[in-house]
Structure formats: structure tokens, C-alpha cells
Length: 326
Image (cartoon, rainbow, N blue to C red; front, side, top):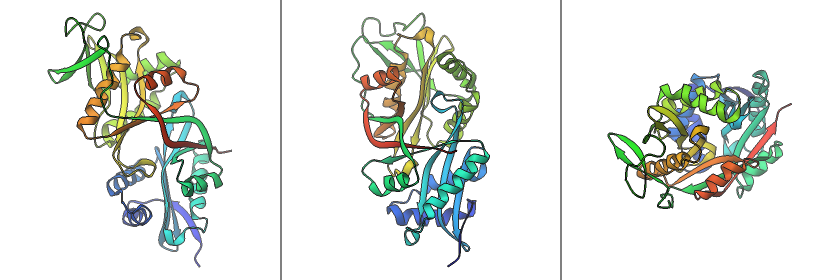
């Protein structure tokens, strides 16, 4: 029997990857896989993509995306969002060989944390990751449906005017300002990067330009649907919510949305900006027929947890697993 070797994934591997995926799940994610493979092979600085081959035949694959500054951490992490092995070849250690290949490439890039997600009830998947020494991470997945927020009459709402969503209150003058001027909720644009980085630095105390540069690229050029938003006050960005519509990460086949980060400039705390951004995001997602939205929260981030739980989020059935690479 030929030896299993690990090499980088190539664009011409797509048909075989899609075939394996279809045999594993019965519901192929061709759009997601084609897009992710094109991104991974075209931008190796942001991905690690490995193939396990036997002779000339591809028997398995794994793709991890690289993030620098995730969760306010200045060090980089590799997030494994898809891995698969031909059902006829399972049980031969190919999956672990793929993870080993990813870990070796992580070391060369000086990346020491591997992270992924799995549904807790899928014992086959959780058992595989457990055998590969991934453990439960101090991060929780929380989610909610995209029904409107249960807003109190005194809280902010929004209406669309002149192609933008203008925030107003539910009592008195419909267009009463949140602060000195009206707030505008609009779609995130490429030239918002500097403002987002400045707000984030105010919140966490150090610059994450590289992280947000990669996030903007993902949100604005790689995502099929743009849903990220910013709040403006007199032309200045006062807050932002970065989100994307997910068509297949971590083995999911249904369409769902993921919130990556939310930030409000400290000068606007208490004005309902975060609530307004989330409210408008939910309206937009429901219009796109996206049924659920999720995000990740560190266990010790009590402020963010309290905000999101108050907005109807609750525990997901997905676990975040992590491994430190020596």
C-alpha cells in the first residue's frame, strides 16, 4: 500500500475535495469549498491548507485560517474550519496526519494555537479532536434567531432614509438625536478601517491593524453577502459591528450569520449604539432569510456576555476546542 504523504492543497484538488465532502455529509458545500479553496491557495499568508495523498490520489484535506489579534490577543491563531477524509480510508490515521501537517506549518509561521468548533453531540467528531489532544477552550458559542430585538419604547430603533438607516427613539420626536446629532447606521466600507482600528485601540489598549486588515479583506472581498455595519455621528464612526454570512464553516451546511466583533467608542457609551447596530443587523439578516446568528465570547468577558444575553442570545450546541502547539 502506498505511503500517505502530506502536501499543500492545490486548485485542481477541488473536484476530489467536493467528492469526499459529499460522501461524508450527503449534502455537498460546493460553493463554500470552491471559494475557500480558491482563497486558501491564492493567499497562503492567511491560510494553511493541507492534502493527504496516497500515490497520486487525494485521500483527505484540512484548511485552517490564520488570525492575528483574535479576542484581543496580539498573537496569531490558526482556526481549522474544514477537515475531511475519504470514508473508505478512515481509521488509518489520515486525519491525524493532516492535523500534524497543519501543526508543522503553524510552527514554521510561529503560530502556537490551533482552534476549531464541533457540535457536542457529534461523538465521532469530538472523539477525533479529543484523540488529537484538542481540549475545551475558555470560549463559548452563543446564538439567537434573527427575530427583531424586544426593544423598549425608550430604546433606539431605526428607519431607512436616503439609503441609510437613521437611529431614532420610540417616543417624542421620531428623529430625536441619540446624542448631539442623528446617528446613521450604514454598511461598512473599505475606508472605515482606520476609524475601526482607532475605536478598537481605545477599547483594548493596543493596535490591531493587522487583524482588522485581514478582517476587512474577508468581509469586503471574500464574503458573498456584506452585512457589517457602522454607526456614524456627524460623519464620524462611533461604533461598528463586523459580521458575515456563513455558508459552510465548521461542517455546517445551513446558511447562518457570524458576528466577529462589536465596538463602540467610549465617548458614546450609554447611548444605545451597540443595541442599534445589532438591531439593524438582525433586520437585515432576516430580510436575507438568514435564520440564526452566532458569536464567540470569552468566559471572563462579563460585559459583552451581559449585553448579548440581554439581547436574546443563549448557549449554542457547539463547542470551541483548542490546542497549544509547543
